[in-house]
Image (cartoon, rainbow, N blue to C red; front, side, top):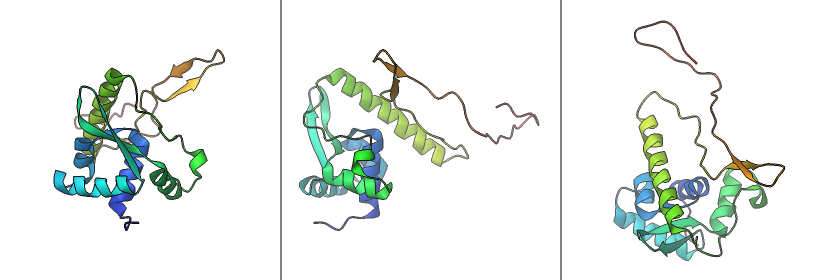
Length: 163
């Protein structure tokens, strides 16, 4: 078993939160160069922390969390694997158009998250479109969070703050 680094834990947490990430997305999030990413991800795959697959019309390999990685995520979040909103994928997704859309949303999420790190803006969270609530009729109600807890703001030309 390889020595698990803080970067590995960050990778597992991102795979848990993002669900699927392409190779280039993982490089952008965690590695200085594709070569180092390739070597480390190959080891993590071999040890059962991550899984990969290819999809039609998507040039890159796609990564998701495997069982050993989910156990480390649960430990990091101080919960049980059964409490995570995660399940072991036994098959690759069938809707490849949706998967391309999903990866594009992850690109947007990565860009906005990284942009907030470089500014005084705090991203309170990101609700992926697959998150929703079941209705009494058995449908899934999608929702967007449109309220923000307390917001501190400073307006350059006014002393008024709009929440």
